[in-house]
Length: 141
Image (tube, one colour):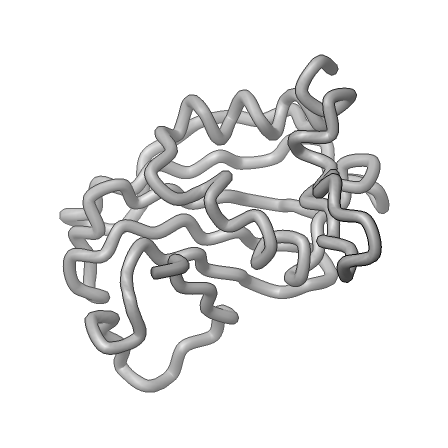
């Protein structure tokens, strides 16, 4: 696991005395805070890049298209969820062509953190019906 050992996916920040940045993965497990701190690992990434990152952290997965008509999203279904690997599914919408407008996003469904959506846009440009079930993380501007 070369990237994991480098600290890249483990949240190493190299700052002394500064508040520690939470890691993205801890033994394959993610948290909302870790995803928020490492949102750039998901924004502007292809489904293959995200799948590779998951595999490097112990996930086995299947790739399929979205079940929703007209959606170009691709879904990574996790086939080996455990207590340590809490991600159940990752949906990658690279062109954002959905009911939420044209903002590309990645939605991560977990067994203990709920749904987390990382959006490559701002709150002002995100279209919602007002009943959002995912916690939202917007890109840094």
